[in-house]
Amino acid sequence: MIIKNFKLFKGQHCETTAAGNLLGHIGINLSEPMLFGLGEGLNFIIWNMKTMDFPFIGGRIKTDLLTQNITRHLS
Image (cartoon, rainbow, N blue to C red; front, side, top):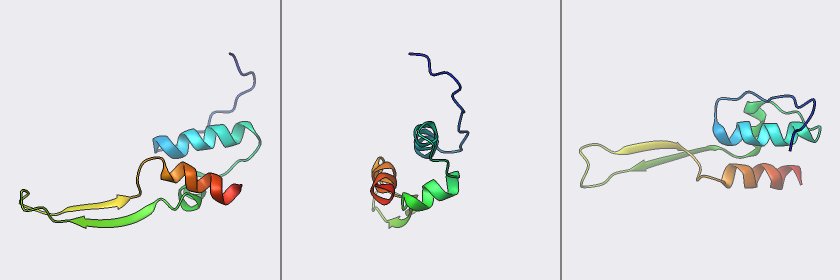
């Protein structure tokens, strides 16, 4: 299928870029920071495992939750 006049959404993260492309296609144009915020993308975890010399520090939510949160907020 070829979609004519498709305007590409260029982002830095795969999930927000995909969401930006899909939403833009139906006329909802949001910035990547807005998509990240609506998706509640920021999180914090410190995981201290005995098998590692240092703790793992992360800052993202689980994969696919970002898209679910965006759709929930935009309903």
